[in-house]
Length: 114
Length: 113
Image (cartoon, rainbow over all chains, first blue to last red):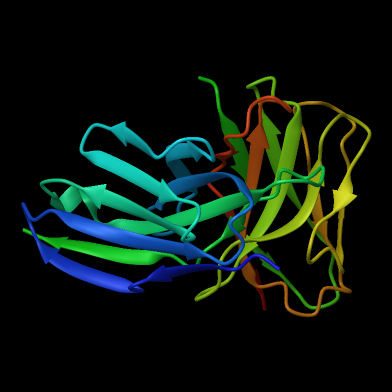
């Protein structure tokens, strides 16, 4: 059974710092991995989608990497800003099945201090 | 404006009542999903629908029901059989089988009084 873990559960950094959020998964047979951002009381905003054949994806100050063999993904945020404060969730989609179901981690709560 | 809308934003239910959460999308997406989010836990799949008039149970379907009579609508009913319904409910959609990214609505917070 696929399990997704995110460490740390919470992180506080000063503005301007570069930071890395971690996501690990137990079954390497994934189809893709998606990173989301969630503001308090809001829905999820998709940040990056990495297909299993890719090693990384970039969008602005965000860079996500994927190492399937070790069951790990990282989300790198460059030059953090207070507006980056939110909960960051990663989710994987396994091969097989008809659901295209996403299996989520419990998230990392990020606070960027001005 | 294209997107996914959920209503209401907040919903209060008395014990023993059924309530229905609305999810509408104007993105012309084929697949739609309902997830439940509890504090300290990841999102869990309740029901999903790949096409109109078809839907399947997810991991925690007990006490819930859905319908998919129109492509753009996927309402979720929380029945009195759901023992612990207080949670944040998120609806999502996906364009089609060849496209895997899921897009989420703003959510409905359900509280049982």
